[in-house]
Length: 212
Ligand code: AMP
Image 1 (cartoon, rainbow, N blue to C red):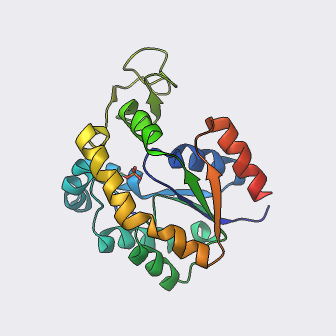
Image 2: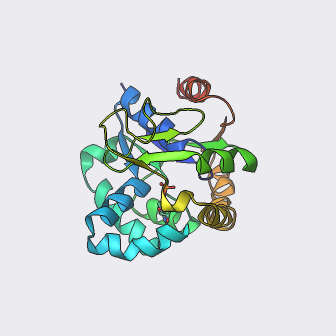
């Protein structure tokens, strides 16, 4: 199987994480989620986590140099650099340029398109496992027992940045800093639009079709 270098682009709540996990299994690609890495660092109370925590809780982007450093380190592993799916990085033009300077050329950028009411409904109903990171939705994908993770039995919580004020900030950050990447990758002929309003299964099917 030929390994690919993929990236998921889209607003918060587009389903990037869900699809990236599926793709990484299906195509044997490393799943690189800067959001997951930062959340882990925050929980562990590392220097990195302390630096990132206040930005994350407010729904703001963590400074470029911090995130670029983590990704550079991750991609310095040749096995990972051979085939991966970036989920939540790059999120600014500065980060995209840094990726190019690392000598990484993406094959395809999957731009997941969803409208704002859908985003708000998805994020405000999202619950996440404090232990394994599995995510649920109170209405569309509820756990078998309320408040308890199906996978590991730990407690489900609402992420601080899934609260209404933080959701608003995340959307503003997306429009101001991340949406310009649509033109950036379209210019480079890498961008493919995916209809993120569909069910997770339909989105997956559309992506598989594109990659075939
Ligand atoms: P996510 O789980 O991808 O929604 O990311 C959660 C939070 O982590 C974001 O709201 C940012 O505060 C931070 N974060 C994740 N990835 C990046 C990135 N590439 N650049 C800046 N901040 C990021």
